[in-house]
Length: 111
Image (cartoon, rainbow, N blue to C red):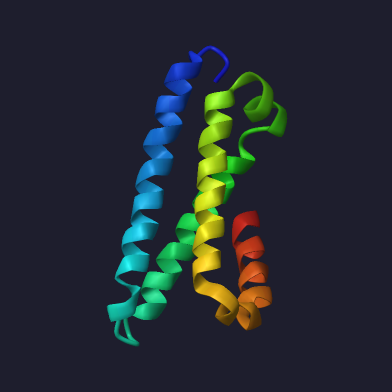
């Protein structure tokens, strides 16, 4: 990636992250009207998207995104904030399920 200009790197990363965030937003907006049969599939899609975002973020060192590629760092900060807002939206109802969900996300992200 070092031979790719920083602006092009930002464009490439944006073209990956933006559709992923849009997919999560669309899935969450439609979550209220899901049937019990549809819900597990949609929630699994959201989980897969979060794993993909997590994998993308792990591909960049903290020094790179905070020192030499600030535009990329800003994108990751926005995506991280987006994921945090998603969790905040779920509220306290998520707490009983959080340990199991995090455990599964960690297992999935290590595969």
